[in-house]
Amino acid sequence: MWDSLLNEAGLTEREVRSIMVLGNNPNMRASELAKELQTTRLDAYNSLSRLQEMGIVTATADRPMLFSSLRVDEALQHIIEMRRRQLDNLEEGFNELSKGISEANASYEANRRQRDEPRFAVLKERSHIYRRLERMAEEAEERLVLLLGRYGILHLCRSEALETVNMVAEKGVVVQVIAQLDRRTTRFFQKLHDSIEIKHSDDLDSQGFLQDCTHVVQFLNIEENPVGRGKEDAALVIESEPFAKAQENLIDTIWEDAVQFEVAEARFSKGRIHDPLRLTIGEGSFLDSLVGALGVDDLPEHDTPFDPDAFLAAGTEVNQARQELTKGRLSNLKILGIDLSRMLRQVGNRVGHELAFSLRSIENHVEFLDEMMDWWEFAGLGRLEYGIDPVFHVQVGLDHPPSEDPDVLPMWELDDGIIEGALMTRFPKDGNVNVRRYDGTGQPDDLWRYHIIMNNEEQPAEPSS
Image 1 (cartoon, rainbow, N blue to C red):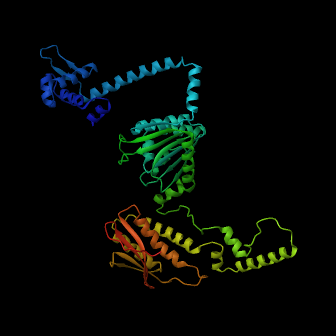
Image 2: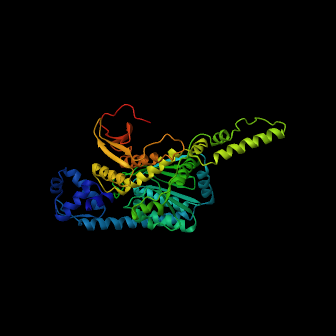
Image 3: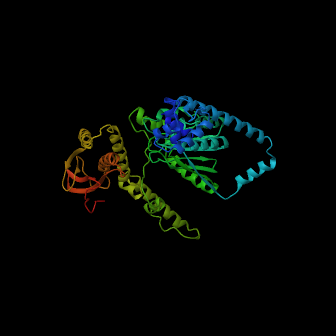
């Protein structure tokens, strides 16, 4: 749109409208233009005067004067050429003055950067923020980290900072990118240099940059439209080594848990989740669990005289305890602090997550539940049924219900984990649907239930553990 481009070039709304009117209707009096713009003749004269100074509007020597304007495209081209000349003059003057910068001034700048007191600044508009990234990349000596959130790769590829980031990566600076992949953006990561390591994190939706543990840029506001111009974007620039160090520690934690790009990208190219599955095998002190299992919990707190008989007796007792543990009973794992129930539920959650991911194209929730129920029954796990009392819920029945035998592999935890993972993926906590797990009647076809509750519905008081 011509008017928006002229606005970006620094013209006021009235000046833009004056160009558009005069460009189509030359030789107008100021009073006629004022009437067309629905403003006063004085305001019209002020706009015409500035446009004349810029060389866009001309006036005749008649009384009254008649005004004409370049066409809107000619006006914009004229402004571009004028700005280019101004920039050339500015650059020429800067280069001339730069020749006279003394070593004292350079030393002062170095000392200023080494001061301990933090410095803050706010940048507005995406173009200015990415110009700061370009500068950070040029100054980076060891490491540059880009947190790009979900759509930041689009903004990077549309900026001149991309070329600079790739250049410093090629020169040996360690450049790392953490993003939240989206099927519409994965192809843009191909524009990054091969040496740049890319990882995906489901939990990362923020954007920012870190340079050499000294400079941090953190986005404060990002336009909702990912392909917009970013006029409303804002970021905080922080020059503080203690803050940057804390940010680096946080980034390293996210980086450790994030998934390699090639693995995460397979979600969209192969339709499967290949991310590594990290399991929690237990909790508490494993040292205490082992000591208790071996029966050596009466360890002395200080040095005691060597007693051969006590040493041999203790060794015999420990060996007998170890032989008992190696008999292969599942209950022995629990004695050592390894919780198979938790592990199998986590595996089930992952299977459910993948199942929901494979059904993500189904928009209707009821159709999704129908497909999930069909899969459940086809896999021979049991039977799922709808219910509406006291609220809409999924009733879970298992072909292999829970057993009280501590040495039976708790496969029912995996089975139920599948339902839990699928529902929690389909209805995340930050959505408008709440999922709660409750005990059922205890019968094999009604062991427990998952209530699917709209946020404005009344929820039952006590969920089961």
